[in-house]
Amino acid sequence: MSQAGKIVIHDFSFRYDSSPALRNVNLDIRPKEIFAAFGPARSGKTTFLKSLNRLTDLISGTNHTGTILLDGMDIYDPSVDLTHLRRRIGMVFDLPISLPMSIFDNVAYGPRLSKMIRKRRLAEVVEKALRAAVLWDEVKDRLYTSALRLSGGQQQRLCIARTLALEPEVLLLDEPCSGLDPISTASIEETLIQLKQQYTILLVPHNVQQASRVADRAAFFLNGEMVEEGPTYQVFAKPEDKRTEDYITGRFG
Image (cartoon, rainbow, N blue to C red; front, side):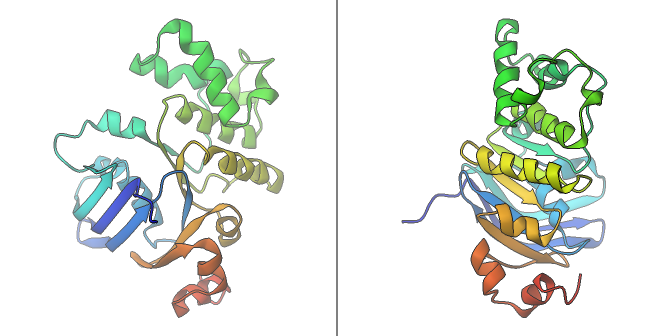
């Protein structure tokens, strides 16, 4: 029995001015899975992620065709509230940027700004987000110290917690381990595997190996085309397209 898609993408293409970035992407993202989009630089992976919560709207001269549905809602419908959409689909970028304030205030920043949570619930929301990001035990005794004193891996998990505090349904992560050492990378990967129990996660991995370690399903992108997608073990062990096999085995990219 097939699962209904949390995100359903149909014939989606995207252009920057006259340059195509994505071509006719068709894809279903299932609830509570980790989906990895991998491929060489300039293959369309980051555009793909940013299209899912319309961060691409911030760039002038862009246009798209096709549809992206979130729980059946067309996210490009003119009536869509972008603030609400980006709360439902949160994004964590490659460089962890902690705000120059305490750990607690970093996580509380979004809920305070949006006035979505009453003050008396704030501590509960911060703890829940830090626990979900597998950071609580490391920082619970120093919540009011500067977040800038955290290690790189801890700061990246703090950025994940800051996004989770807004209570999203979908998490987008664009190379969240690109600047991290192997130990910190392993912590982030363990965190993602725990998070998929509650969230749908779309990941642009730091490298091919990361996709194979954490993703339930994966897609290979090349020159704006989604070459193939499927269960991760199938894409990596028995790719259907020779271009996928060549990339995975290091023949190019």
